[in-house]
Length: 169
Image 1 (tube, rainbow, N blue to C red):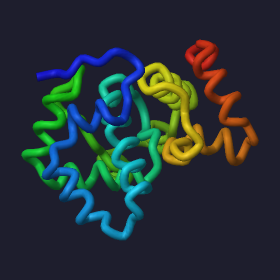
Image 2: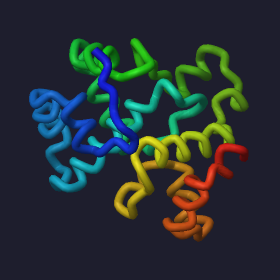
Image 3: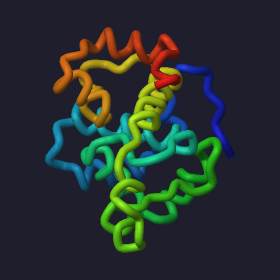
């Protein structure tokens, strides 16, 4: 059964729709070294990524902190199958590492991040979940790069992504 949301979707709505108590307990046991607030942020951002995964193309736009949460979920195959069935627009959220893609014959160009796809992922995030917050931006590769390495303010990033200009990059 797919869950329908009114955009923007809150982290609480995602947790209620997709995070069974048992899975949260399991993830907490696996990520026991994380402070509670950090654990919650990572789980929330992983749920956001997975919720919009059917609309994403190209490389994974999140950092290894979020990818690690996804990997832990995948290991619980029945729960992962339930999650995939519940997320709108998809029946299975595929995962392929860069190393495997290379072994399967993918070129560096095919594996490399595509700027337009990465920008579209960020615009999709803002559309679905509202503006990036200062404690969340570091989990999204391009958003983190634009704010840290390029000096773009968080307000400027969110304004650019909301303006619709990001979609045409």
